[in-house]
Length: 355
Image 1: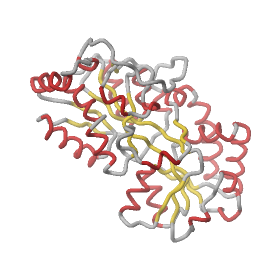
Image 2: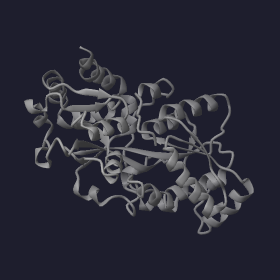
Image 3: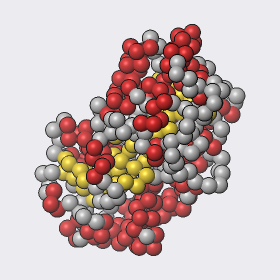
Image 4: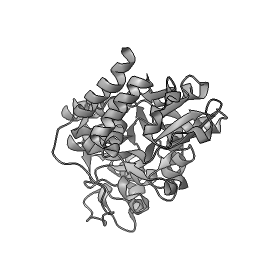
């Protein structure tokens, strides 16, 4: 996935607004078979393989990085003899293309893999279908959406990354209120579009107190706004932004593995945005689509974990999650409440930097 997460306002420009928010629920039992995506017979893999061989192709729209698509595509090809065709763009680009194509009566993609809020918008646009997999049982319950038209595959956990040459581990803030200490003046950075993180933190603190906290922080110590999680992590490694509030854990771990002077910790709770995948409502290659769905929830999880991603499968995800208080962002709520939180984020965070 690209490290850039655009404003969810782009999602809202295309999504239908339906009432209600999605919540994690117990893993569903296997449904009655009505097509490849829902087939639950013991010969599922063999049956899907045979169908996929006849179809001979697979198209995936994704916001994963180029290297991730190469790794996943090569592994799928090696195992099943089918080379996936990936079309890459930012999450908002993936969303726009699918909605544009589907409204024109074209369903050219088989599987979509991107950010949770964009997937939820595609569910509301009725472009995805319900799916089942024997590997759903391995996933964290929060990764499974009630409607089951998309499922979490990787977890973007927001962490606070710091430059180890400029800050000591013992100096790391224990709470958000600690950031109001004058020693943090000019030291703090944030990604420009992390509205969902902002809204979640405010709610955790208590809406009135949370809004006041961010207003005080911006007014007293300032917040440097940067576009892109990878860029923000890199600026922390260079020392330009000593402490970044919203970097994905895999961005920090990848830099750390390369020897960069960075480390990360979390001001509890650890906020997680689930990213995932769904199968097209009308896939050109339905068997290959279902086969790739199963692959991403099994072998694909190990491949992603090998590149420092937190995965949705309990078989491959990092043990660090066992030691954190986790708070999952609800993609449906992100869509429903975006206008409110975007307005506050812009007013308190973005515009303060321009003053």
